[in-house]
Image 1 (cartoon, rainbow, N blue to C red):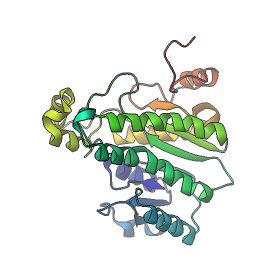
Image 2 (image 1 turned 90 degrees about the horizontal axis):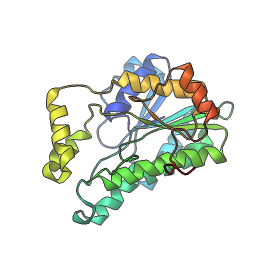
Image 3 (image 1 turned 120 degrees about the vertical axis):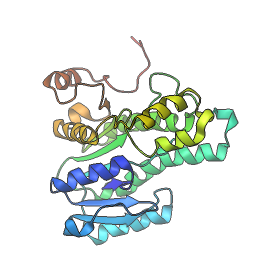
Length: 263
């Protein structure tokens, strides 16, 4: 199940999984993704679903039940960086709405779909992290605090459910439509505006979508005892290596949300 299959990362992850033979249910909020369903026959189904809408979530759950679909993976590509600006300069209702989109609604969806998993095997949940875990992310407080909450929830959920491999990936700077929100905000984004403007105008891709896909599959392959509850950086971590696998096995605190220098 891919939440936000019309987002850039979600769409590309969907294509990679389809080409590997997976069966996918993808949700979209407004515009149906640009994928030719006829090419994949029974392997791909789209559902119009705004995960912030409770009635839409019920429709999604009923759709999954109707098609007797038992999921092995939920990947969420839902998110927004808005509202952008210093905390006291923005409308609090918009701030609250962003937290709902970036964190609460994603957790609510996972909560509702958990009973519909494939109970015969370890199932996987992959979320997307963002900036701000190691420093202030000025002008993006709703986005930042939501992503940090998701990091902690991965650890909390796995602690209570050993049948899940739940982790969160930091994709790094990659070319997605989300950055258009910053370009639209202009000076309200302060220093980040010029950084993203330069990146966008360069035409660079940044993190390749295939790298995100490969990192996710590595996390799935090595399993929950090693990866669950952790925040993995696609760009900065040596995922895919035996060395990192060994380090993670030995250190239960590594790549988790912790106070610095507690010991």
